[in-house]
Image (tube, rainbow, N blue to C red; front, side, top):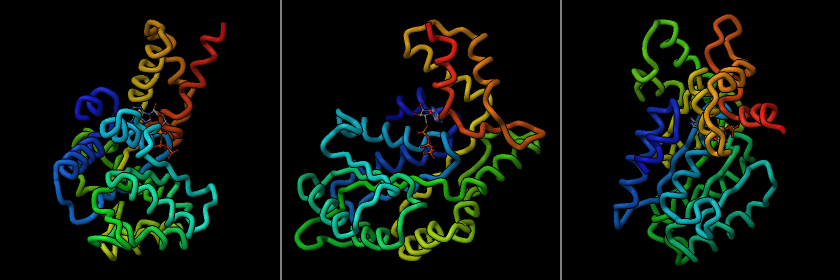
Length: 264
Ligand SMILES: Nc1ncnc2c1ncn2[C@@H]1O[C@H](COP(=O)(O)OP(=O)(O)OP(=O)(O)O)[C@@H](O)[C@H]1O
């Protein structure tokens, strides 16, 4: 996993460190007292889904396609009784199941309540133990605050890699979430200490986009052409308007822009 994170994940020194420690520590503990719960936060296209995939691939050969890895997208409706039996059924079949909940900030409060018992310190619930399971929650909640911190560092000429987790503490605290739903989600989970790690994803810079584009060129079997790399990266939009430091969409749309150069 370290190798994968080091070679594939760009510009996320904080996420890399937290995730590696959290997952390897948890997997090597034969008797965890509660499931591992990670909450990944940050701007769109900065690698939250991508990291979830890396975690899954390093635990199960099939990665996201494994029978033991389950992706739940909050905006696709799912009644809560069904969600509970889905979690229960999957953990009964495999104690080390991995659940990834995407778009957590858009999740209905009732659904959040429905999953809470599974994240807690119970030896078992109706004969099923959830303590070896892994829950990963993805959201954009707190992204603006995370970006503000990254921008402050940039403006004062400090290296991005100097940003410490404690610089992000406020950005990821309950008060930072003004969206009603994500506020509920975080306060109810933070109150009960159900989330083990809040993981910030920093907004990506021009140089990170270029790294994403190079990887994509190589995976399509092309030689890296630096001229095209720069042209694609320059087509992206950046913010704040005057300084143009961070990519609006992270690395998300660079791949479709690349199609334009290779459509013949
Ligand atoms: N930090 C990164 N390092 C390397 N590649 C990245 C990074 N961030 C994004 N990518 C690339 O961009 C694609 C889209 O990113 P991803 O889906 O992980 O974004 P996300 O943070 O989950 O966004 P959203 O909040 O919109 O769901 C990834 O599949 C990956 O190829």
